[in-house]
Amino acid sequence: VERWVKTGASSSLSGRRSRDTGPEVRLRKALHRLGLRFRLHRRIAGTRLTVDIVLARHRLAVFVDGDYWHGTCPEHPRTPTRGPNRDAWEAKFARIAANDQRAADLLAAEGYRVLRFRECQVDRDPEAIAGYIQHEVSLAH
Ligand SMILES: [Zn+2]
Image (cartoon, rainbow, N blue to C red; front, top):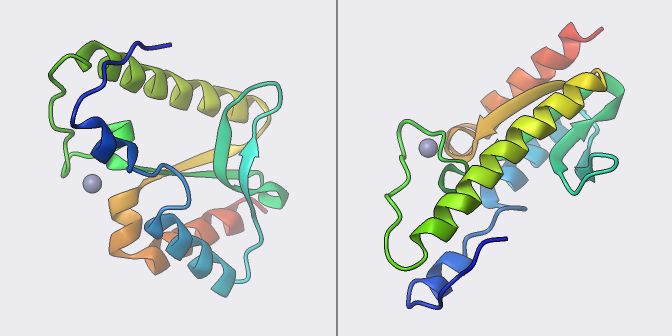
């Protein structure tokens, strides 16, 4: 576990949500409108890893990644970390990336297909993302 030093930045950073974000909620509503049924924040057995949206019948696992935490968005790169907590942030981000990979491997081993979207993609057009998921569902049968 990372070691943290208290700084003025910590209060604003701790306000960043990683679940039930606006885009995630809008995506769920769009999926509902398409008649798709799913479960939220399901834990992968034997781990502390969770899946944002699980369509168990269709063996589909959906992640909505926040740009900040996952750092995978080419349009919204993470601002470089600095200051006394730099190492702790870097360790945290590395752990998130490792967990993403581990979750994908475990889900694949259980026969799940994994879809990852970025929060900003979902925010731009939740209906389109829901439509894409519906299309994936149709391919599963
Ligand atoms: Zn982005």
